[in-house]
Length: 100
Image (cartoon, rainbow, N blue to C red; front, side):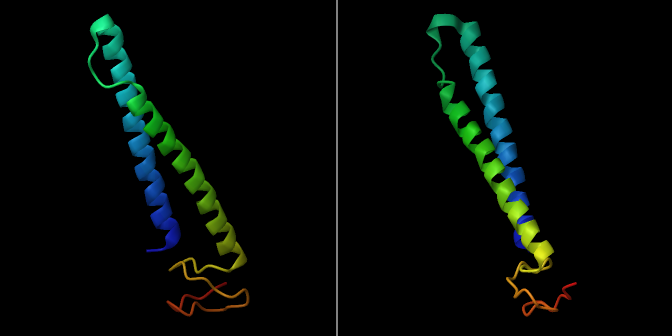
């Protein structure tokens, strides 16, 4: 599997987890506001902080994907298998993919 596809899959997983945790945060806030003073559930920050961390991870992985795409255009990474190539390569030494 090329490196870029696995990074994009990681982005999608982190984004889904971040959305889930943020929705859990909102549900906790709603439950806390309805129950008033005697709320005994988890603190809302328990869901908010990890959801923010997931969103930051997605943003950081986006910059990695942009870097990989930039290297693909220059020709240093095989677009088929992700193997590092020399700048003047015409074929990938790993999979035989023809580099334009």
